[in-house]
Length: 257
Image 1 (cartoon, rainbow, N blue to C red):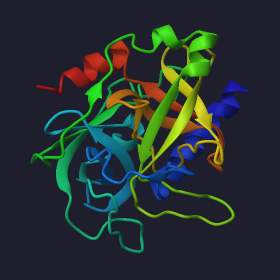
Image 2: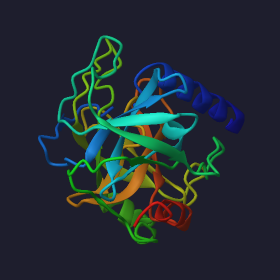
Image 3: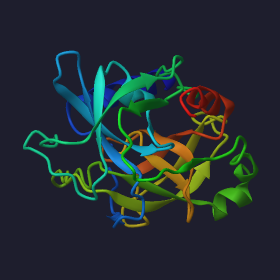
C-alpha cells in the first residue's frame, strides 16, 4: 500500500512538471486579500519554462514555496497580480520578479517527512508585503479530536479550478476554506497537515496550488505549504507540509534577515 502511494506521488509530480502544478477548486476570487501570494514559473538551465507553482512572500525578498517546485530549477520568476496574463502554453507573457530557487537539502518523496520546502530569493523587492510564519508548535494543540472539528484553514493559489468534465486553468489567485482532518496519522505524523479537499463543501487545492500557503483561517499566519494529494481529480483529501516545525523554521530561517 505504501509503495503504491509513493508511486502515485511520483506520477503526480511528473504531471505537475509537464502542466500546471495543483489550484484552488470551488474557491472565490482573492480580490487582493492576499497580495503577497504569487504565481511562480520555474526555468531550466536553457531558460525554458518547465512548470509553475504558487508561493508566499515571507520577507521583502524571500518567497516561500514547495521543495518539489524548486527542485532542479535554475531560475524562477514570480508575479503577484490577481490575474496573471498567460500565453497558450500556460506560462505568462513577460514581466515578473526574477529570483534564484533553493530546495530543502532533505527533500525526498518519502512519507511522512518529505521536507517539501523551497524558497526563491528575489533580486528586487516586489513591495507587496509579506505573511508571517507560525511559531514552532502552533498546531500541536489542535491534534485532538476536538481541535480537528473546530479548525479551519484558508488555502490560496493559482492552480487549476477544475479537472473534470473539462480542465479549467485560469491563472487567477483564488482562495477557499478547508477543514483540518488529522495531524497524527501515518501520512502526517507531525510533519503534514491532512485537510478536506471537497468541491461543493468549501473547496480545496489542485494541480498548480503546490507551494501555496495554508493560513490559519482569518489570519496571515502560514501553518503549511500545499504539498500533495491522493486523488488525480483533486477531491477527497489534501496535504500540506507543516511550517510550524523545527525542520522548516530552521532551514527557512537561514534565508531570512
